[in-house]
Image 1: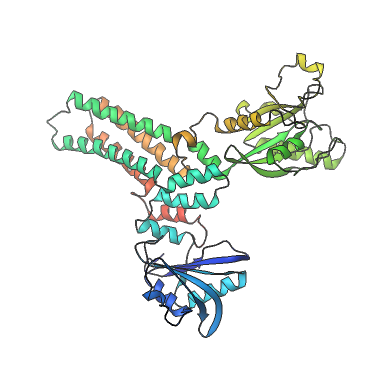
Image 2 (image 1 turned 30 degrees about the horizontal axis):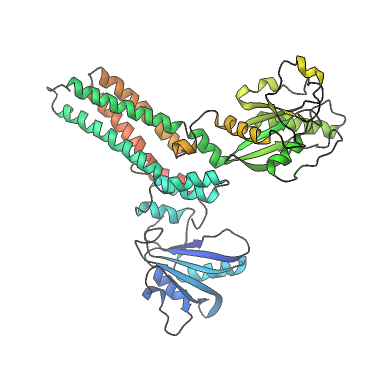
Length: 457
């Protein structure tokens, strides 16, 4: 990536639509726009003469060839997304015309942007830190309101401010320790040592609190998979339709209607969850049903959460074609359906009666089931509502390294020996925590982060 280049790309999704937006950014963005944009009015300014944050009507031409009627927006540095001179062109959204407008811009002197290059330039120019840059991608890909809320909070700098405070605090402790290293004949006073230990205790506890949001961060960004399993006619497909809010699976009184897995995503308390409806578990009557049951077992083993649906109006299930007991309890949720019907007497002596009772016919118990699903997915971890953040895997790795280094520094400081080791571990902690916001970074790290972005972002 050469920051002296002027780059361009389509910023809207591929395909046909009413409108598309192309973004141009770099030192020659206004000159490139001058070369391909023709103002619609006789007295209308060229882009290079236009004030910042103004919109202009005109046409894009590639040489003498008319391409499209457009609106062009000018954003002068540093008051733009990238911190550079930026031009955005709104054109008609057909695939062909969008390509033609982009070709005209590239022919005028821009080069095609790499994935995530606009956001990377925003980071390099100080418009965003790394957590905010990652939040741009999170917001674009958010599938639920809670995911968008978490991304917006991170984009607003909520996580960055907390990380900066922690880094500043660790830097303060490091500065104090290094000052004593410069005067080895002078010991740290006991009350000062206690204050430094308290600050390290606070830093370790703070890292732990952030780390407890890692699971939720993964759920918000990647979602979870929940498999519905049980005997034929237990109500798995009916439950799937209720959770989705529309009819996705065929519901029939005929046992064995579902022969293959059916997948569909739903919003469960703000978390995107892919529900997998599976074939009823019984001794197969034919090869097709046997394959469906095999796939059911595979879906159950791969799922983050298993919903075992049982029919309370029928005798309790005894044996199943595969072992559900091998799945850990924290990944299982047993749901008793048809609670609106008379209960089968066999449940009176059943070893495990479902605590969650629902009726797919009346809707009874469905809100409680949704909340139980949310709680099971969170598994008691910190929530976005209480923490205000949800870290990702990169943050998690840096925080773990910070925690380990702080713990080593605290142990050494408590013994009041080897201050050089205390300083070494504190430098490691400061460097690791700085990676989160980009105060300590490498080209490889930036390449890994921004390569996951789309073109035009």
